[in-house]
Each structure stands twice: as C-alpha cells, then as structure tokens.
Amino acid sequence: MADPKLELDWGGDAPRGAESAAPAPAAPEVESLVGKGPPGDPRFMSAELRAELRGVLEGGWLSVRQSFETLQMLVGWDQPSQYEVRGSDTRVVLYAAEERGFLQGLFRNFNPFHRRHVECLTLAGTRAMTIDFPFRFMLRRGEVMAWDGRSMGLIQERFHLLRTILEVQSPSGATQLVIRGPWLKVFSFTDWVFEVSQGERVVGRIKKHFSGWAREAMSTSDDFSIELDDGLADGRLRQMLLAAALTLDLVRFEQRGNQGTFTRLLGG
Image (cartoon, rainbow, N blue to C red; front, side, top):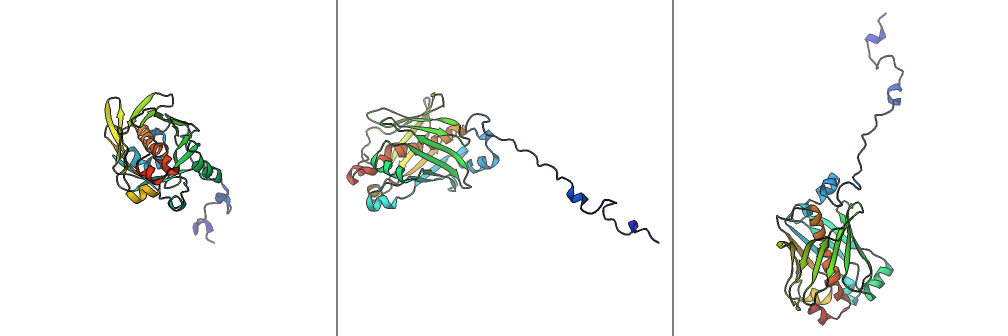
C-alpha cells in the first residue's frame, strides 16, 4: 500500500491549526518623534506631515484667504476667523481656524482684547501648529506652538506711532525676523505691504490685498499673500512667518469688526 505522505504534503506531521496558532511576528516599533530636535524642525516631523507641509517649507509663495463672514455682513456679528492656506502650486496646504464657542463669541464681539486660540491643521486633520493670543490691552503677542506642543517662538507687536511692527522671536525672546508695515498708511483701497527683514536683509513680504469696496466695507474678511525669498530656507522661520501673517490679520485688521463701515474703509 502506498505511503500517503508521498501523495500529498499537508505541512509535515504537525496537526492542523498548529501553524496558525503560532504567535505572529511583532511589528517593528516606530520611534516617536515627539520632543525630538528643535521645535518645528522639519527633519524631526513624520514623513506624512513633512510632505503635507511642503508648500510652506519649500515654496516661494503662499496665499492666505479668510472665509467670508455672512453673519457679520448681515447683522454685524463677528464670527470665528477661518483661513485657507495655499502653496505656490495653488493647492491647499493648511486650514486655520479660531476656537469656537458661545463665550468666545461674546468676548470676540464685546472685548477686542480677549484671548484667542488658532489651530492650523493639514488636509488630513493633523495639527501642524497652534497660535495662542493671551489677554492683553496693547502690544499683542502670539505664542506659536509646534506640531508636538512645544514652543516654536513668539510673534510680538512693537509700539510705533506711524507704522505696524512685529517681531518674530525665538522661544527665549531673541529677535529672528522683523516685519515692518507701510509708513502713515490710512486708506485701505490699495494693498498693504509688510517687509520681512533678517538683520539688514529683506527676505520676504507679507501683503494684505484690497478685496474690493463691498467686501472691505461689510466684513473683516481679508486676503493675504506671503512672498518667501530663496535666502529664507529655515523651515521653522517659514512656519513662523505664516503665523505672523495670521497674527497681522487678528491684531491689526480684525479689530475693525466692531467699528463702523466708514472707519473700516479708512483702515482703522
């Protein structure tokens, strides 16, 4: 009689189910990048986050478009600011939005110095950075946190009678970039140009674009663009410059929300 082992090989003499019962090999551990390297350094981001932020980290131009506030147009009620950030290839890179809530809405409309919190998220919903604006009566400050919650730096408003000045600072308070607005600009039917300097060298520009008489008169919805020179290659400073553009809108132009139409048209 023929040996049955020669006819079919069912995996040797092991009983059925023995192979499936064996423990599966453990998946390789993925090293956590939280807390690694300087805060916001692209080298210590996940590959997915770095790829989604490529428009900010490598491009030469960004656009920041604020959503149109319907309730403000109809009844003058200021809503949480929401922004869409696009890269040089015109694709959306980030969404940024203020914290929502009933109390936040009351503070926003009746207290121009209230605390604000802005979340910047990728298309996949991953947090890229956050900006906190503590309660202050004057010389507002934005505290920028990297994707892992560590402080990436500060956006500090400086006192000047004739122009808007912001400083991009390291977490320790050292000045890295200075952003200077136009001299004695009153009327807002032309673009506002803010030069970005690193030492004595201009490395970029932030432009607040004139959005048309109707939009300027009836809302605080604004359009910005950021021009980044090739010399500004530091990925952390590029993220901070985006945070500075959002800060400019929130501390300089959003304050028009509770003012009259004529005052807003004059850029007040």
